[in-house]
Length: 445
Image (cartoon, rainbow, N blue to C red):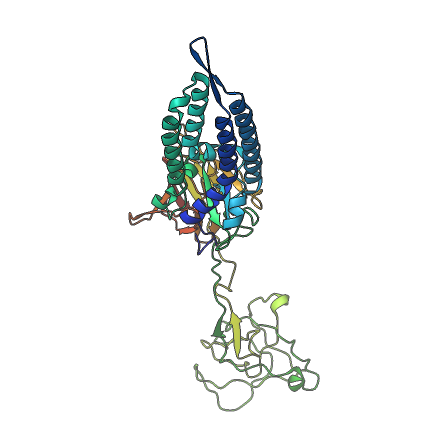
C-alpha cells in the first residue's frame, strides 16, 4: 500500500498516544468531580440506622458526567466528519472508513464503545454503589474494575500489532470497518480522493517508439520535377505511388500498321527494348490493366520496354527520407480485445473501462461514470463495494477495495494468489478472481 497508493497504516504507538491524549480530559474531569463528591458524603445515625448524605456526590458526579459526555460528543462529531481528534492531530494520524473517506458517526461510536467497554462497566458499577449505598466496599469494587477497563482499552488500541494484513486494523477497526493512516509518513486519503486517490495508480504501459528502417529504403529517390521536365513532357506529380507494373500478355504477332523496318530481328525474351515512339507516331494497340485516376502516375524513367516476367520496383511516399519513425502496428488499426467476465452463476458481462463490483457498489469521487456490477450474495460475504476493475488492453487491473473477506486470483496454471487490499493487480484472460464466496472468470470476446 505504501508503494502503490502512498498510504501508511498508523503504528500501534501512535494510536495509543492519540488515544491517551483524547482520554485525558474526560478521565481527569470524572476523577476530580467524583473525588469531590465522595469526599462530601456524610454519615449520621438516626434511630439506630446509619444515614448517608450523598447530595454532594450526586451534584459533582452529575456535573462530571455532563462535562465528559459533552466533550465526547464534540470529539465524536469532529472525528466522524474529518477523521481528526485532538490526539490524531497531535500524532499525525487520521481515522477513515474502508474506502478512505471520513468514517461517519456510526463507525466512530462503535469503535469508542468497543474500546471503552471496560470503563463503561466501571461507571455502571459506580451507579450501583450509589443506588445500593455500598460505600464501604466502593474502593474494592470500583478499583479493580477501573484497572481492568483501562487495560482492555489499551489492548484494543494496540491490537493492530497482531493484524496479519500489515497492521492495518485493530479489533475495533475490524468491527466498525474503519482504518487509521499515518498522514505524516504518507498521504491523507480523506482530503485526496479516498483509497484510490484523485487518479488511477495502475501503471500505464505504452509501447516505446522504435526507430526502424523504411521497407523501401534501398529504392532510389525520385528525381525532382524540375529535372524530369523535358520539352513538352509534363512534370511527374510529386509523391504519387504508381501500382506495380504488370507486363502485357505476350502476343507473338501483334498488329502494327507501320511498315516493317529492315534490319536484324531478334526473337525470344532476350530481345532488346524497342525505341520509344515519337509523340506524333501512332501508338500500337495493346491491353493494359486499369488504374484508378487517384493513384495514377507516369512511369519512372527507364521503365519502358521491360521484358515480360520482370517487375519494376514501385515508388513509395517515404523514398525521400532514409529512416522513418514507426510505431508497432502502424500498418493498420489495431484490433482491440473485448474483455468479458462470466460469474459463477452463469451470467456474462462485457466490461467497460472502469467497473465496480460488490453487493451494491457505489462510485467514489471521479467514479460516477463507472460500470456498476451488483452481485447477489445471500450470505453477505461480499462487501458493498468489493472490487474495482480497470481494463487495460490485454487484461484488467483488479483492486480489492479494503473488503472484509478479501479477494484472490487464480491464474491459468492453477496458482492462487491473495490480493493485497488497495494494491492494483494485473489479471490476464483465462484467470479467475475470487471475492467473498463468489468467483468470476475473465475471458475475451
